[in-house]
Amino acid sequence: MTSVDFAAAERRVAERRKARASALQLRDQAHRSEQALRATGHLPFPLNTWSRKSIEAWDNIKGRTGTRPAFRVGQVDAELLDEELLELLKGQTGEALKYFGSHLRDEWSSEILLGLRIAMYKLSIWDHNASYGAALQNLCYSDARHLGPHPKPPTQWQKAWYGIFSIGGRYAWEKWNVWLVDQEGNYDAPTTRVRILSRISSLASNTHSIAACVSFLLFLLNGRYRTLLDRMLRLRLVSPSNHLSRQVSFEYLNRQLVWHALTEFLLFVLPLVGISRWRRWISRAWQKTTAMVRQSRSEEAIGQEGELAFLPERTCAICYQEQNPTSTSENEVLAVSGLSSGVVGSAQTDITNPYEMMPCGCIYCFVCAVSRLEAADGEGWTCLRCGEVVKECKPWVGDVEDKSEPRDNRKMVSFSNEEEQNAHGRE
Image (cartoon, rainbow, N blue to C red; front, side, top):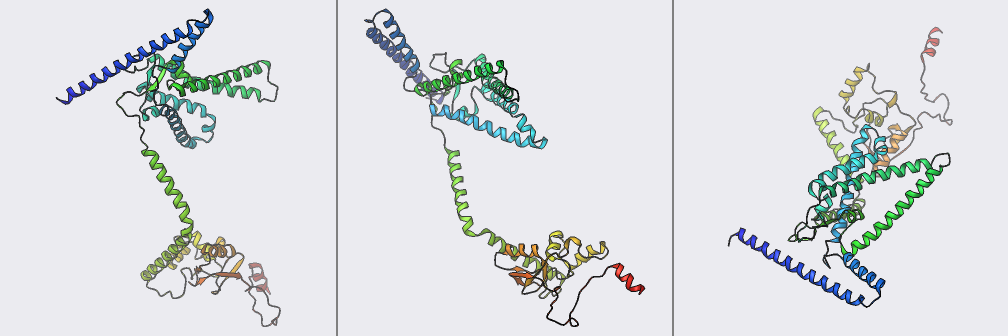
């Protein structure tokens, strides 16, 4: 037997089983109806009719699928997946629109959601009879009015009304609520018409919520219609083929759990490892390596001098390094100073609030010195002028007069301006 003949035989066997199951189900329904008629036949006229109608309504609520409805969890997960996809698209669209103005994402959020819902509806339900979430759950929409063994695709009118109510109706309801809030939130008291419309809107919202709750309870009972709109339009989510498995792949969930466990482990381990200490060690090693390479290229014996030992004393080496990160050698600095009339540094790199490094005695700005020592975290910082490792600093007292010494033996350092020099020249 060829594979084609074997597949045809399997289809024939499946059709026979479905026909036998349908016949048994019809026989069972007829038997239940006969029992209900016998049980209610002895009742008086109004009660027997009401009882029989109630039993038939209960049988209709239970549905023709018996205890084997469509996968309830899959139908609910399909709706949740659609909402998550919509939120992802909304976030990406908002990130793209922020370059045209941050106000667009907030002022046009309803219109953005409307456009995204229309695009998703056209590319999923209208074209393939299933949303993206339903397709991931191996489900598709079918016409529940068709009672045959095979599911029938929904009609164009059913899909059109579904799009109008689920997309256009939701957008119109949001705009209606926004208009009511604006009318009630004015400085003036709301008019009688606005109050009446607000009450009608609140009543309609409560009625819809109650009806949706009852519909969802019936869905949990028979698994036929997931939402109130599906029940009104007679649309059902069913599996496109009975040969497909209803088991959902948890591959993506497993990946998410593994990644979450890995991130939690790293967040716990990284503080214990001490990333800042390793970073400082690598930075210091890199500085030493670059200094050695620079020394070998220039073939000059630097000795105990730092990389910026050639700067004048009035210039803070740290400020100069931050403002000139590329000019680190003496030749480069002299070349740059040649372009600026031979002046090394500027007013922005002069020392302010001088502090003395210990034990080398080099002078830096207070903020620069403290920031570098604090970043070293007690391990010491390499001085840019002398190359020594320093761990503390103190205020510089070189320009403070010592009153215990005789005035004649004191050393004074002062700065004179041009007017004083001209006055001394005239004298």
